[in-house]
Amino acid sequence: MSSKERGHTLILGSEKKPSSFSPLKIARTSPEFMVQLLEHAAGKSLDDEQKQAVLTALAGLPEGATVRDLENAVVKDQGLAPIFKALQRMQIEGVHAGLFSKSAD
Image 1 (cartoon, rainbow, N blue to C red):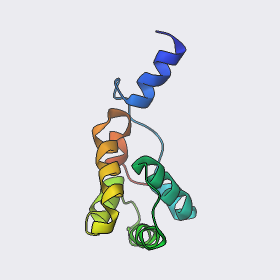
Image 2 (cartoon, rainbow, N blue to C red):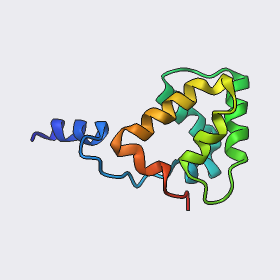
Image 3 (cartoon, one colour):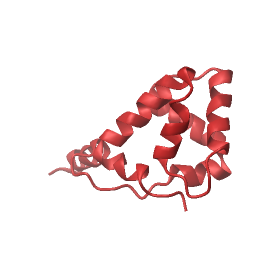
């Protein structure tokens, strides 16, 4: 397997290796970065109201929350449907699935 193929395999998750990246840990110190990350994952720019809703959802997460907790928080807001769909895609794709079960600590 070439290095290019290997990189695509890791990005696309076909080997289903869990990621060690903890986005909620970053969200505690830089919530604006998390909003940008979610916008990128959704492939859609959020308006100011949607960004504020994501920031509110992030701020309301308890210590030790998982990305699944974030998913549950944003599903309640119809305006955040693109973020919810992006989180669902991340959960389905193997390389990101581990983010939904491990805590941010």
